[in-house]
Length: 294
Image 1 (spheres, rainbow, N blue to C red):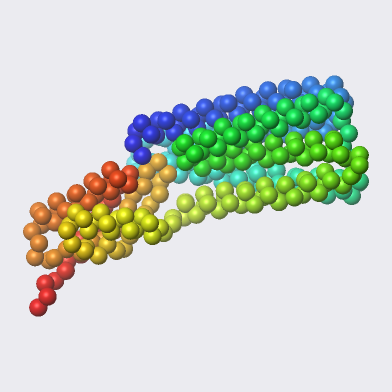
Image 2: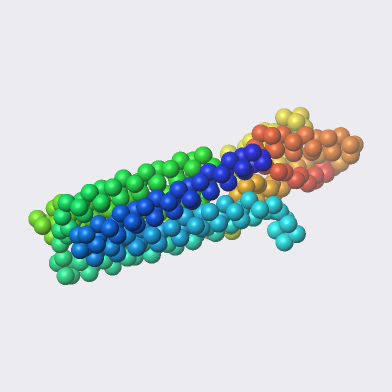
């Protein structure tokens, strides 16, 4: 990833974080007002929950600040993996949200509680659902534009809030006729949120631990090396290290032991340069000698 791409990625991530914070504070004020006016403790509680969502957005901003710090002696490969740490943190918040949905749904089912908050509650709930889904769409757009896992996680966090607002709305509209529908929907959506959180955390941890090279990339490496060396160089021992903002690749090739060292060096340099230009990966190549047939 070149400098311009990094700057664009940082800008989009930073903007999403601040927009999310502003949106959450605005929704908090609207919900708190509606809760006080209508006397609904549920809406007041939901208002504080919305304000607490700013924590995940603050973590997105923090990831943008730390991830793009230049390499130093302690972290010679940069700080890009902090973005994965941010994703894990947001994923944990989603797990908490999912757990709370299940707990509240079960309690409401046991108590046979219904939801009936009036016209003001309906308006505020609809506004909340639309706003949070719009924030989710923006975060997901940023993820597709930059590949930032932190933005993806924050997008799902916004979507979980939009879904919770829809559940509340369903309860308001039909809760008097089907008293248990809100409880059922809460549990079903909670399971979906928990699964999403699991995927976010799993993918982030997998990247931190290190992943094998995909067959598609291995095929591209072999094609590049073969075309440049004008022979089959038997690409093997491939290791890819993903530092989020850039990737480091090492692998071995085989060249004839009698080949002039300058020629071998030129071949290796051209392969490394082509990989950098075509695949945006920094490669380091080790040469194994092939003894001439006797």
